Length: 332
Image 1 (cartoon, rainbow, N blue to C red):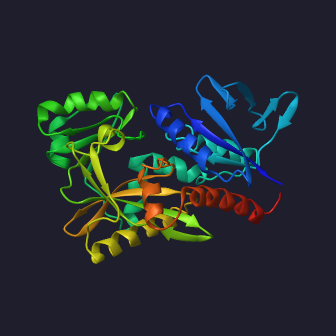
Image 2 (cartoon, one colour):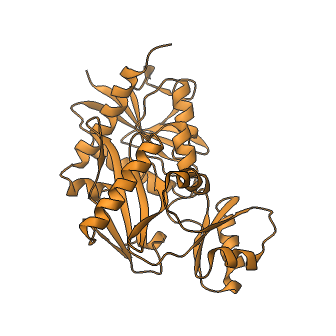
Image 3 (cartoon, helix red, strand yellow):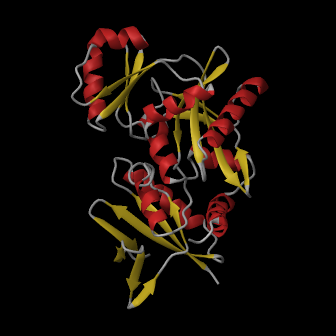
């Protein structure tokens, strides 16, 4: 009997359009001989099941079910394809845990922690994970530009603390540019992280549970045509994403070990994609994404393809891992 799979897509943040694209790719590639697949749009103003002819049926939030033509449809698993809130910050994970619904992403705590760049890096530093010097600001704090520059230097990056897809990020070269960059970041979040610029090779490392074991995927080198890996570079073709990365075996070994170690330290599940920059031949961690882009052109699927894993196998494995995990959890 086919399993009913809900693909959650959309979300409440600036990334919702990207999420809809990821969700559509998952919908197209899941094995229809094994799964009955439903596109579920979770938006600020509505949670709906969207049919092939764009009819909408509201989701019952009490149990995440939907009524279609007087028939109640329930789901065996949720494939989480939501970038940003509520799919990547822990809210969706918490809700699904409360209704005992398996899902393909990490747990609520891991999602909330990794979505908060400041907290995630602070948690990892005691384990010896290297990261850039940083300065924190909250909305309403007094801004001491001299103190910021003394801590992180110039150039530096000003980032929204809880945002993805490079929304709310600026590279600052001069003190006079700092306030504008801070204003841009505060449009996306009420918390900011300002980081020292690291001049080196940037790489992205995908890690996931695959067939029951933690697997590190081939490494991607990121070469942006712009000043840094911003939104245009990520989504509008203004970058080169080279898999496998053009780095030495020693560098590849180091960063793979760190990425796997971070996955284990944080007790991750599902997909992760972590970004690093090499400085003095050592990988410095920038951030971790727990719901990375899932289109064929996205980095993690590129890495999976290099490892010989098709999109059909990649997405199907995520569902099977989630269903298997549910079997292992004792009933209360």
